[in-house]
Structure formats: C-alpha cells, structure tokens
Image: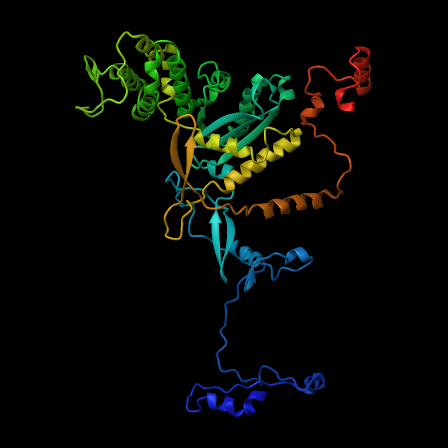
Length: 505
C-alpha cells in the first residue's frame, strides 16, 4: 500500500460514506525475482466482467499491418495524435467517399470544382485532434474534365529592353486562377533575338496544353506576333478554332497612355482631366456590350458627353440627368484641338477592329501579381544560369498555387484587415485587404522528392556538372561572336597603349 495510506490527514480527507469512493492503492512488486516467481494464468482462468464483441471476418490483406521504423526519418518530425499521421493517411486511402465529383465551391469564382478521384488527403493538427481534408490532386487532371477551358497568358522579361536573356511565359486558368503552365526561353534558343522570345514561349505553351486539355479561348495582351498566331484564318492554330480575347486591363492602360500623350500637346490640355472618366467608360462599354455594334454605340457616345451633349439624333447618354450639379472639369468644345484629338483616338480603325476581343471582358491582372511575385525568387539585378532560373520560376509558381486561395486576414473582432498604399500616378490613397499568412506546407514534400530522386539515382553528387541536352548553354555564349582567350585580350589592350586594366592597378 502507498505510504500516504497510513497518514491520518489522508484518511480524514476522504469520505468513507461515499459509495463511489475508491481509496488510493498502489501495488509495488518486490523486484525482478518476485515477478519471475509469479504464475501465469490463461484467459480461461481470468475474470472478465465485460462481454467480448465478435467481429465479422473480412479480407484486409491489402492493408499493411504496421509501418516499420527502419530509420530515424520514419518518426522524427512526424505529428502524432494517438496514432501517426502517416497511418491515418494510409487508412484514409481505403475509404470510399460518397461523391463522384468534388463539390467544393471556389470562393473566388463561386463555381464548383467538379474534379474527379483520386483525391489527395491533407492532414491538419487541431490541438489533440486531426482534420482530414480531401482536395484536388492535380490542376491539369481536373481541367481534363471540363468541356471548355479559358486560359490567360502573359510573358515577362528578366530585364528591360533588348538586353533580356530570359522570357518567362505564364498561363493561368480563368475560373480557378491556378497556374497551369510556365515555360522559360533563353535568348540563345531564338538565335539571340529577344524580340521573338515571347512568341516562342507562347508556341511551346500551346503545344503543351492543347493535347492535354480542351482550350477554347486564349486571353493575352495586344502582342502582334501572338495575335498573328491566333488569327482564325491564317494563324498557326486556326485548325483548333481558338477564340482570341484581349486583356481589358492592358487595353485600358494603353488607352490612358494615348490620352495622356495627346493631352501634353499644345492646346489639348483639356483632355487631361477626363482621362480617368474616359478609361472608366471604356470598362463600362466592354462589360455591358454583348456585340460589337452595342460596344460602338456606347463608345461613340463619349464624343457627345465630353462636350455637354447628352441627347442626339441617334441616341443618348445612359447616365442619370445631371441637373444643376457643378461640373468639376471643364467641358471640351466641339471642333477644338482637344476634341479633334479625342475623336481621332475614339474612331481609330485599328482600335475598333479589335472590339470583338474586348467584349469578353477578360483580365490578366492576376498574372501581373505573379510576375511581381517572381522577383522574390529571381530578381532582375542578378544573373542566373538557365537551370537555376528555370527552377526559381517553378518555385515561384508552386508558391503561388499553394497560397492562391488564402482567406482574408481578420483581427480579434472578426473584421477584415486592410492596409493603405499610395499610387504615385493617380496621386491617391487606397486600401487593399490583407490575407492570411503563408504556411509553406509544401516544402517538406519538395525535400522528400529531392532526396527520393537522389536515392533512386544510385549515384552520389557529381563533382562536375554535365549539361542537359536541352540546356541553352550548348548553343554557345550570349554574345554574337565567340570570345578570345583572356591573355589575347590583355595583350591587345597593352598594344593599343591603354596600359594595364584599371582593375589591376
């Protein structure tokens, strides 16, 4: 018995009249010799107060009996809640879900996922419990089930101007906003011509996606070479019947630049106060119009409104009556240089021929955000070898897809958190909603994949790296001519009388 049993204070604390009271009792065996002298009893001799349930015999030969620990990595860093998460994940793979298609609603687009099995299982710890979550296993596999896929693409140069070495072309899906393809082209792969790098990226993207998913519409900026490839009559992909739409964000941005440029001309400064209103009117026309004719009627109304004419023989403005409100910006006089310049921009034939590509009202603004995100992995002030640059852009894409659906961050009261920022061009303050912090939960999976690939290779780390067959460095240096030896350059430098190079002084 425990030593506290003999203490008087311990006995007084208990209530002997309570029927549920059980005295504190601890049995201590008298050592190893005593244990070995104890007799073993069988199950028939044991006293069991509960009825043992009987289970039906089932074939569970496919389920592993246990996961053996063969190395320290099998248990180190593994989260456990009574059982290891790996065991729960294995058990979850044998569950038959009562759904044939994923019905999860995308909080961004409001549409159901509709992806089919197999689903990937995610496990999240919540105190002493574990939450199992079944998700979409692969972006491309889920898109194979869709009859119509709309993709948005845009290119990014690693440095401005004609000195760019790499062009990265990223493609996302319209509904999910997930990155479905990313490709990088080295300048040497286009005969050292940086002008056609984006075109080459687009060709590689389409050649990779078209055999996998049913692409029906492609949204890009107004790149003339890509527009030629998507020409329905003479383009490279005319047989696929792809619809080409132009990014409304780029179009509005270019329209604002044209008006701002025209407003800087003498006697045309009256256009500058109207830039924001004209761009907003373009957005309105592209969103409301369902045909080219409707777009043109709404768009031409701009020439009447800016000179305070809201009703004319063929139509009228769609806004409410202005009444006696004070006009903050001056009206543009008909026939003035400013009105003539605006008329030339609004009625530009080259501009109006692409109206059909605007009324779909597509935007690639998310691609702009991702291209800024690439700077975290591949800054423009640093030089990278082709494999390193390609890997860094892929890591940026994995980061983007993994955190694409983060929920807005909230404070303790449950309200959304915002942060203000200042726009230098518009000279206005604005706010944007903060999102939840990133967890980077995919990094352990990447580490496992890297180690697994190295272990399967059967070879150690090579001291000298061998170039892959598709490595652009096999095509030579970036310069148009092969470089001479350093000693020859030094000798030529000295013979010219320029002396020792500055760095050696």
